[in-house]
Image (cartoon, rainbow, N blue to C red):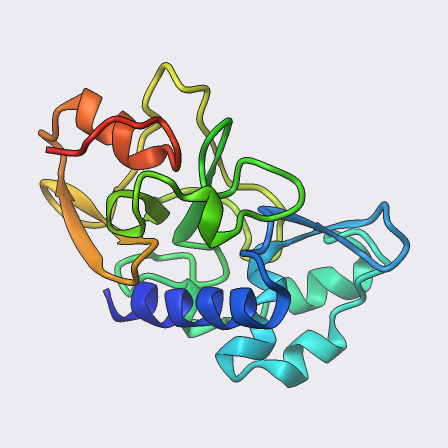
Length: 187
């Protein structure tokens, strides 16, 4: 949960500096080379030196950037994960989610209230922390989250609070928590 809190502080610092949250996939200075929001947050996580080493004009899996993908960034790693270079925390990407557009959402886009919207989820996936890949959400089927704790998974809401969500949560409620502007109250 501390990792999610720290990542959320970095998200909010990024938003303060840029006027919006990072998109899930950030484009490099050439306008066509994608990299992950996790790379974009490095300067806000006391990892500026690592960020400066990352080549934003090269693919995430270039020879140079793959060396950096092997660096363990503790805040992106759940202690219960046996693969320390994989990410344990993901954006949920889809229409009406916080990471659902290419420009990055602004606070004003979150009309359902920042305490009613999931910013990031914990999930066990075989995805390196530098890879610009997150969890797709089509608005219909809830993706699989969790995998580190019995009975549920942790999330950070847009207001910065970290919650443990039971695996028995009503799917309708989870749908409402994933969308920033569906107008449906969260019970």
